[in-house]
Length: 185
Picture 1 (cartoon, rainbow, N blue to C red):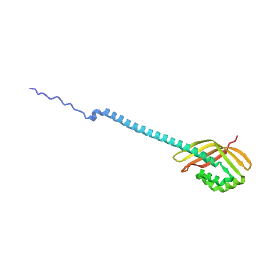
Picture 2: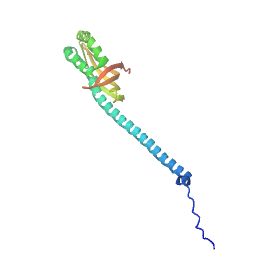
Picture 3: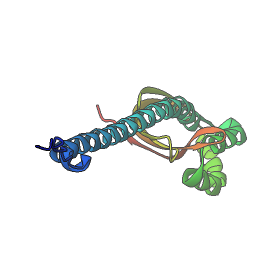
Picture 4: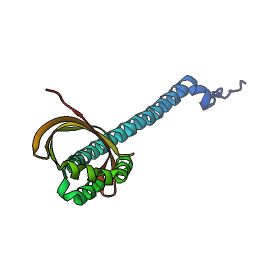
């Protein structure tokens, strides 16, 4: 009699071996998706931060322009008959280096303006903030101004270009440096 042999049992390969290349491909795809997501998220974050910084700098520039215009108008206002008030106004419109220079020169300026009977008033004709940094609290402004000068009984109108460096203070943007150059023509 013949014996019936049981069917041979199929040998199974371990799951890892069977999925070999396919498993590596899946792992590589998952890794690429995760890495791409991380890089994309990082790029988005940096772009978002840059956009926020640009918006903050633009807002700082608008504030600096507004305050700078007022500060420059103040610096262009001199009247030998009201020197105490003019000097106080100049000091409140300035900070840092310019404030120190005005503080040291105040007495000499008062004497000079009174001797010359000097009266000035200025009007900004063009002004633009060319740089504003909301983090450091600094801004640079360029422009032109017309300054009416009365020296004794003689009057003249001067056209100047100016550069103003501003610093943000608790009281607003104040002039740290202010220079003018005559415009010929």
